[in-house]
Length: 140
Image (cartoon, rainbow, N blue to C red; front, side):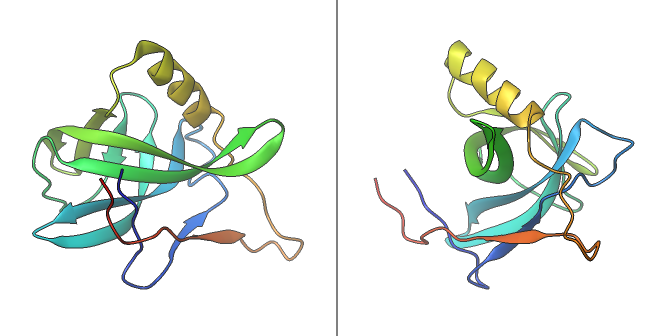
């Protein structure tokens, strides 16, 4: 298993939907390793076909990514993560599939992604954000 930490020590992921007209799109942070450097970037996930909007991202097919996002579990908000693998490249992003090929796991993760927590605002109306921090060292 791998754990990551952004170069800036944290990566910010919003808790509300990027666009309320697109209910199947959520915001997430994704981390990967490229040329022996670890990178984290904020992206949006389209739940139709597991497509990540990542402009100018050139990731090889087979690259393993870890996604961090908010979801509801047991009536509370939790920070969740999921490993996905790049299966295709488009001009404005990449297509991914779950890294685990267990049908039950994939069904559970699709449900969790669809229930992703994403529409909370602070009393002042500003978007609430949370910091995602994960250990940067890799373990086998």
